[in-house]
Length: 541
Image 1 (cartoon, rainbow, N blue to C red):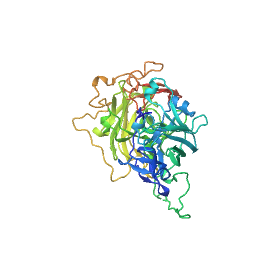
Image 2: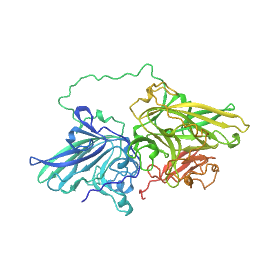
Image 3: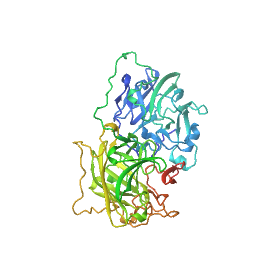
Image 4: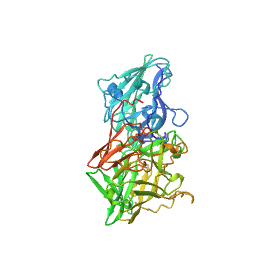
């Protein structure tokens, strides 16, 4: 058997430490290569972990390690994997899955070359909130319509052992978990008449802090003092009462109010939502949004570097920001609504874009090349884009939303939205609106020769030819117009600036050839709100 390195199909990023200490002196492994290695030591077989996350190999005992499958390891489950492991074809947390090359997560393999002979590996016991399984399934196997190869599984119908060949240096099956929480995997390895049994603790998702989890079977160390008090940080009495939005749908909307325009945030669906002033909200971009910059996105930075990516399609557990002008009817406006990003303060750059029909990113807002930038939407439009933040920390984005009413009156509103990216800062302690961080870094402005006119940016990158840019004068999608969604966003009612929009009461999705996970997305309207339905598929490319 030869080791199979699974390729990646999506986006992801994060730079975990690989050596965070947990309770009991355990080490949290949350990134990088590691191998479970049955090894002969003084004639006795021992199951150990070869940890290469720091660039050098460190041999660790499974009972001294907590493996962390972060929230970003939540991926689409190919049907053959679900069938082979008897689990589910719903999204599951996967290590070594098709997105392994694009997310910051552990990459566990099996090394049989240190045992001196073939090794029998069995799942002797399993404890956890869901099901666990290991199987191999590659894009090549998918292309040949081949079944997945199961190795181990907690489901009764799945085998509990497999043979690890003595010449196998790195077997890379997919590790699948169907639920968040603490999983404990007890492996028994046998070779040449010698055996070893070890329990590996795995924390799946971010509901549980892996540094608080006891390794191995969960037994406390014998030298751990009991009855010791743990100091708990009390919230600051001056902490502001911000409304934190950390997941689900939220629109940045233009609303008519008494002959004027008001910029507000709409959280929820069309049938169940609340309106908020930007100055009373903190948007939280959770660690699950962390991904690696892929090739072809040079405007974001160096490929492989971490960014925090909010995709055009809705992903569970993270915020899904969109734009909304559905409070305006076309007859009420003379022209389009402009959403202009005037300034960004924060530790990194912010970019907003979509991919055209050829998969080329079309950038609407980019604080990295100077501001202001603007994009426009027609009345009655609801749209979504990809958003990317370049670093963890607190950001403040100041937008001016403006329009001309049908009677020629010019109306506008300028508001600042606070964002917290990552978990280094507790979003509930952040002052919404403009704030007062002394270390905030303002984004550079455009040179005087650059136009500050509120128009949609179509200069995605030097590699994006002008001929691929959507037509900025394309009409808004009419109700019942089935031609929408065929041109990479050019007929979505926002002048080609959105990958997914709702206009005139119908949802339309551009041909997002290069979207993050390569997922087919269909927009379905429920009472005027856009709901994305992801079609389960076999990942055929």
